[in-house]
Length: 212
Image (cartoon, rainbow, N blue to C red; front, side, top):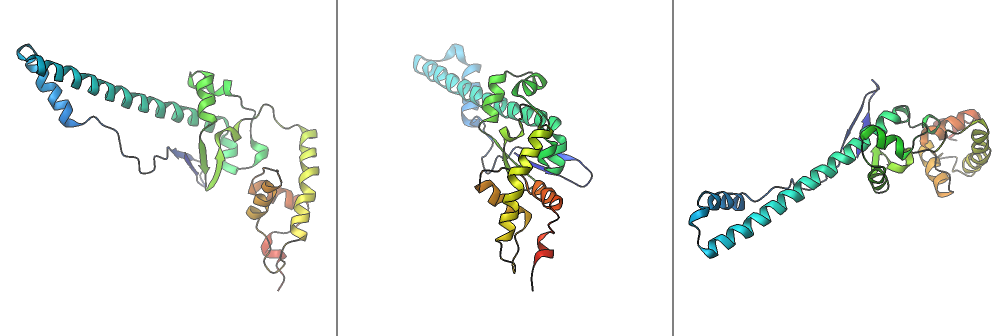
């Protein structure tokens, strides 16, 4: 998916189909089938066999196209539900605003089976305002409590300080780059969260850390 937000707190999304063309049944075969049906009682044995063969293939193609459309509708419904539950995070990309969310919650909202939701979540990604997330990123079993939040800060604050202490002072690291380096160290946090933690540590942004 491609999800975009704007300054008016609206969220839009689209299913990224790339350059895949729309599926359709060949008009030649559809017309041939219609022609056979109009004179079905006058067909020879070979023509009747051709009619049956064409009908089977056209019906198979239409069923396949219908299945693809149903699959698209399923993943679109899933994405709509996730956006509804995680609207605050979508607008800010602040990890602290991720709400508790289970597969069951989305299944109930979409009226889909939980196994279907699981398959969608395990195989799809979202580009949210330029940042790529797996769908499963938006699911939390429980909201981080005060103790858990303290543990996160205890682990991440020293890492952020070490990264900034070792940076090139003529070319300080952006919050986005710091977030990437933290991810390499196993700490998955967003750029916005890095900025928040940096502010709490009284460390200025990159443009004010640059030495001339």
